[in-house]
Amino acid sequence: MFCYVYILQSESDGSAFYVGFTEDLEGRLKYHNNGQNPHTAKSRPWRVKTAIAFTDREKALDFERYLKSSSGRAFAKKRL
Image (cartoon, rainbow, N blue to C red; front, side, top):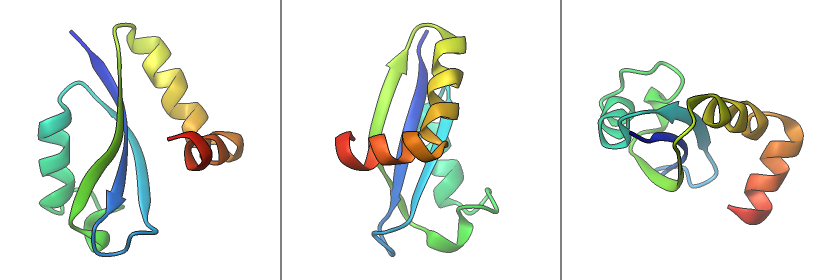
């Protein structure tokens, strides 16, 4: 089973991004696009910009935390 760290990009506001973690990438995208997350509801619809699959849950959560840091945001902007 895979765990995913994903970056969403708003289709309505191309400058809006969201980083998250899930075990069901397709279901999580529907969750965001249905407005069920208060942090992403106003920038719908979303599309998956990048998704990285991990077999180790802890490493995936560590990478998600990193991407949410200032150096991780800079890395994602340049590389992902």
